[in-house]
Image (tube, rainbow, N blue to C red; front, side):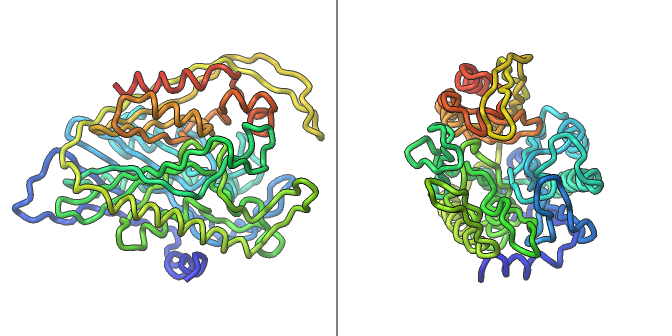
Length: 440
């Protein structure tokens, strides 16, 4: 069954429903360690009444193709409680207030919470950059926050003895977007692209799945700006949402599947519905045909995830949990660009930029969240510098500052480098050192 039919059959009835997943009762003979886990999922899809949703200089959002969600995982070892929240939006809206509300719901401090956006682009808030560009926008932001908070509440309510395991596979679903070569938008398979697929699984003591985390480096934009119905865009969770849904629907997955975007600042899906004009070839929009592209790539990534999960051991029922919230400081700059045309007019120094970093260490796993649209090779450098057996790099942490790219991307600056608030020569060194120090 194609992805669109599967979603409509299984999700359309959910209308603002919530699902809490708790541990099933373990057999009396099972020994519980100190680890408890709970997971929750809440639908945050916009109501039909907001459509058409208009934003400047874009086609309207005209409806919903598939529902979008906020998902939460709460872990507690009796000494430390932490929450990981994944929201199917482009970036976390009003991050300070949202993180504070999530922390209160989790019963922990804001620096023990990791809230990330899946970086899905085909949702109404994709064009939100701090300004109100639609009268319905404040209500949409409130819906996102309420959904994230409720997902955490459900996860806390579900806390029960659990086992934890993690591992790494590979998947062939992403490609460098050309930033390193100065040809953004033109795929560059010769440039850096991390194919690592990291997975984390939580089960009850009897081995029944509670939640999974999947981490992969790709923008969620198979369907970005593709006109699929009535002259406009349709809301979709895109690649992250489709993978989460499939994992939640299939044996071998789990009732709650949190997608955590890897270092994807210069990574795109292999195939997009909307293709630019390149090298004399005209651009094209596959329109509704693009849903097949989404289905194929989602299935490929889901299959790779299931294979990685199947190789995991039963896991530990005890966990050492350490959480650190720090910042990485880099000199700031602003590249002045001519509009239209894109010619660089000048480069101006700005105040130093504080990049949020959250480091969660669970036994020999480090989950490193970075508040940036982070380049693949910086993510790989963070992994290499970390003292942990496995380090999973997560981008688009709440408070993300924008693109943070490798120095090479500034040599022929494209969309990402020209939009970055960071000077070259800092992030590729400072971010790995910051994570490594916090992960000790």
